[in-house]
Amino acid sequence: MRFPSYLVVALLAATGCVGDVVDGSMTGDDDGGSNVGGGEAEAMYKTTVHTIVQAKCGQATCHGQPGVTGMYGFGTADATNSYTQITSTPTLVGTYTTASAGIITKIKQGGGHNAVVYTPSDEASIGAWLAKEAQERTGGGQPPPVDPVAKLREWSGCMSIDNFSTAKMPTAWNTLASVQNQRCANCHQTGLDTFLTGTGNAQIFFDGLTTQKDFLLKYFTVDATGAVVINTASMANAGTTLPGHPRFNPTDNIGMTALNEFYTLTKTRLTAGTPTPCDAPRLPL
Image 1: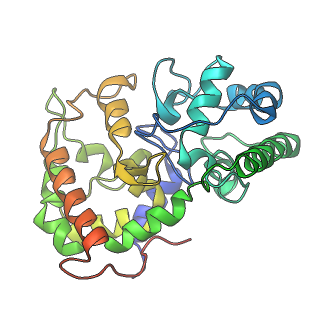
Image 2: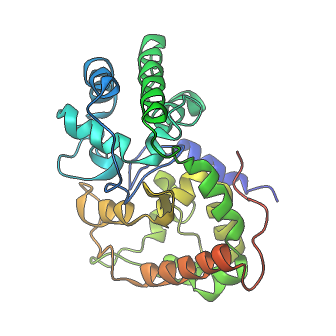
Image 3: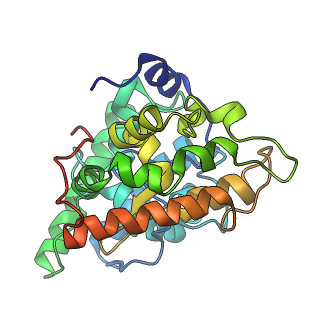
C-alpha cells in the first residue's frame, strides 16, 4: 500500500526538532548501554570528528542541550560526553559503517537535515572514525554491533492494525492535549516535525508509523542491547525540555497508556508468535 502523499510531503517539509531523531537508529532512551572507549577510535573522534559534530549539530535545539541523554545531547562542547552519547546510541552509529550510521545517513538523505550538510572532508573524517571503531570493537572480541534498522524493520512487521486499534492508539493520540489544553493533533495530525498523531483514522496512522522510519522512531527506538523499546526520551524532550513546545506529562497520559499497551501486544507477537506470527517488514530498507 502506497503511503498517502500528503504525509510524505509533511515529513520532507518538516524543519523542526520535536523529539527529533537521527536516521538509521535513532535514538531515544538508549543512553545506558555498554561503551567501549579509551582506544585510538575515541581519540580519533575527539580530535577529528567532535569539532564537526559540534559545528553541525551543537546549535540545534535537540542536539546541543547539556544534561540531556541520548541523541539529544550529543552535540555539546564536552567531547567525552559527546563520544559516550553517540557510541551508546545504536541509532546514531548503526554497525559502524557509513551506510548504517545515522550520524551519516540522516544528513545525506534528501540532501541534508534541517539545512545541515557535510563537506566531503567531513564525511571522510566521520567514515574513517567509524571504520576505526569497527576495527577496535571486532578485534577486541566485543559482541557484533547492533543493526538498528534491521531491528526496527522486524518490529514493523510485528505491529498489526488489530493490536493498534485494540490499544486505542488512533483515538488516544488524536485527543491527547497539553497542560494548556492544546491538542497535539492540531499541529501533528499529518506529521509536522516528523511527529505523527493522526486524525483518528486507524489505517492512515498505522501506515504512517510502520512505513516511515522518522515517524516510527518518535514512538519506538533501539537500545544498546539491541531491543526495541518505547522512545521515552523523545516524549520527555517534547513534553518537558524543548523550548517553546507546549508542556505535557510525558509518562502519564492517554497516549502513553495506549502506546504501552500497543508495545506489549507487539512484543508478545514478536517473542511468542501470538496470536499470529509476524508479517514481513513494512518498513522499507
